[in-house]
Image 1 (cartoon, rainbow, N blue to C red):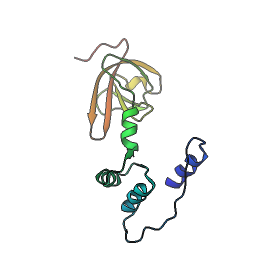
Image 2 (cartoon, rainbow, N blue to C red):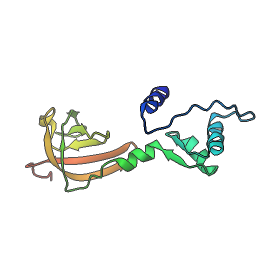
Image 3 (cartoon, rainbow, N blue to C red):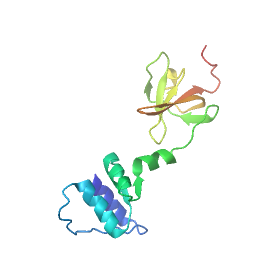
Image 4 (cartoon, helix red, strand yellow):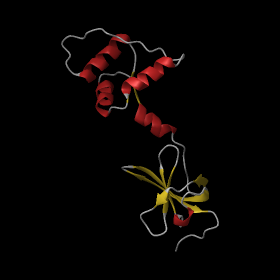
Length: 147
């Protein structure tokens, strides 16, 4: 997968991709080699690897963490906003359905089980951040709130 992404980056005219083949004797660990190379070239590291991120920061090498970038670019969803989703499957609780936003965020549609496969406009009732990611709860427009 990494080589596939590298080849895609090489195709972009705005990105300068160079393969650096200098040996770094005395450094065995791959992460340490990457950080040392970034220091030699006075450049930054782009990664989604948590440990490489920490090592680079410790060595005062600038890091762009792709996971953090992805989180920062996710659209903000707030209670009371309108949202259109397409429920794909049944939810865990009675009469719920589950949909997903383009960024992978799970959306739980209240009273949405009968709406699976249809485009549904709804109102965001709450947003919950979990260890697994963000969950958005939506009540379809025209459906009264559960009591």
